[in-house]
Image (cartoon, rainbow, N blue to C red; front, side, top):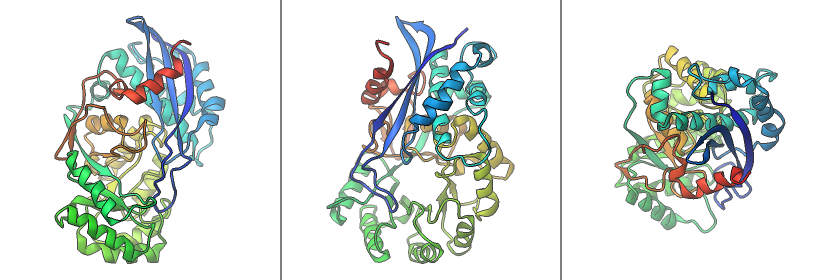
Length: 392
């Protein structure tokens, strides 16, 4: 019967000179964890790894003081799956979130999500299955997708980055196999952003349906509407997070005026907030996209509840394309038959991106057969993870 013998926690920087409309990434970092089991294979313990998605800082204090102690104090027999073959992430979730008041989800949802990722990685490794296959078997989800739509997110603002450099970046994305790309807006004037958009459209042969834009919550209502009027003729893939993620009235008003697809949700971290978005933000299930992040929002355990809620409100899982741009979300997208997954080619290292041997064709990516999430196929990240526990 498997049990957890140790949880090791650390921090890695994802520093960068890039910025979006709201923040720069020069001091940003990420929590990483290694959950060590008592199962030994080939002379090594089986270990599950986890980290938090970019866009939120490391949550080490919450992990050390609250989340990890609760997990380690839980009776091992109450954490196991019914067959005893793994630690059940859903049962562990109940222990990790005890004595936490409702609301105010903030950074604690990040801390829980980091451990949640590691527990799913561990469970799939113990079963000898890639995570997406473990998920469909464990939850009875039916046939998974064998490949997943991925788009390349970039187009950040950076010192010395003009229109030529922006176009060169997008050309490189296309060379890597991406058909759909995303760029930032809102960090410059409307006129400057329109010039940037048109420069990217030149690379895309004028096809606006292959370009998404992201304001990262920067705009007030008047600015969101002004951008919407200017963007409408381009026929974009989507117009993302125009206003504050909790300003549901702004989104509802914009949806009445902007006929193209809107996308939001990456900064909502609970099923309650996700439900309020669906109830009050005017989101349209026939065209809009939901970007809830399975790691930042209390993990996959909570994300599965969000999917149940969405189904009750008439939303297809295909309208969900998670924020995050990493392998965990890739497996989730395949298992839950989501609409796709974000990708950050070369950015937010070492955590961001997919396996080192990943091949993208026509903006689609097939999953590897490596057991677990497959961090072993991402050499630099695996090296960082192993340093948490090797020799201890």
